Image (cartoon, rainbow over all chains, first blue to last red; front, top):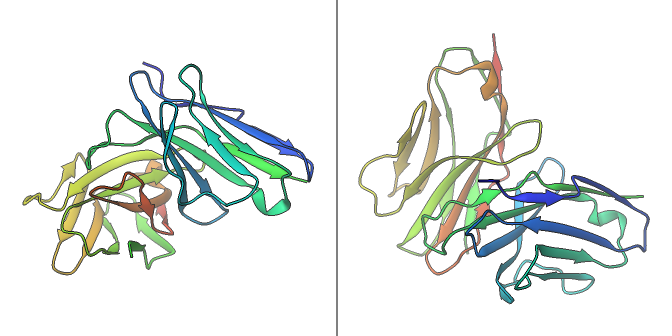
Length: 115
Length: 114
């Protein structure tokens, strides 16, 4: 049973370009979360999605950032017109349920560098 | 507001000794869960242990145990018999009932010395 798969592992974008980060949850998991980690900091929640629905986007910046989890295919975190401050590690996690004790399984992360 | 505080930016321990990593939390909810994750230098997040707010026993998983003191709102991680491979960042996190997101602390960097 493959774990949470994120790609690419590393992504370099010039300022103003778009970044697309992909996440395939574990098999059977319908709950997906995106987190951002700045250097030497903890993870910050961005968005929580279930299939075709955004459930909680309270951590998403209001502009340039969007996320989707379509019926078929991976979840996508999209950052338009990237700026240097977007450089960070972006982690995706999935869980089988929304229960309080449900363990969130994390992917390896995508390290975005904006030059 | 939900908040996790890890007051130790860095800790070191001798191999084979025990170490305690501190975590305090702030919540007004009665139902919540507490998690510890390990992040080695390779970057992945590895789940270690979970404690529910209504659990009467402290959680244990192998060499990991959670010292849960509800009245003090603390959930310290105890690692027994430290190994060199335990050197990593350790994050405490909380999830409140009705919310699915995890709130993370800033982390503690643990170095295990031979």
